[in-house]
Each structure stands twice: as structure tokens, then as C-alpha cells.
Figure 1: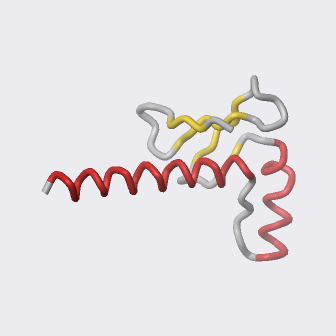
Figure 2: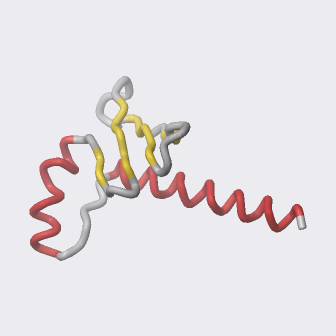
Length: 81
């Protein structure tokens, strides 16, 4: 599953669909939203049942990419000192 940050848009990613590789889902990490059907259909009921936000696979992939980017930048910053 490919994940790409959207240039000029903070914490927004295009994440490749696992069921249709030609389709990209828009993930907004700040708003905690995904354009996929799974997130759209499940998020409200999940939050009502658990009190937590629903993480579809696209949100999880974007969060992982975001964390990897941050960690890499921190490492580079430490090495530059």
C-alpha cells in the first residue's frame, strides 16, 4: 500500500486502496478522516460504542508514514549537531 504526503497540505496523505490499487484515498490526520467506505460506514458507530476514534487501514498507514517522517527528521537533526 503506497502512502504519499500531499505537498503543501499539513498531515494530509493519499493512500492507495488495498482492494483497488488504481484508487487513492484521502487521509487527513488532523481531522482524523479518510475517504474510504470502511471509515465512512464504521467511524460513528465505533465511536459511540467505544468512545474512541476508528482507525481504518488507510489512517493507520498514514500515521505510520507520518511517524517515520518525524523520526527520520529527528535523527537527521541529532546527527547535524
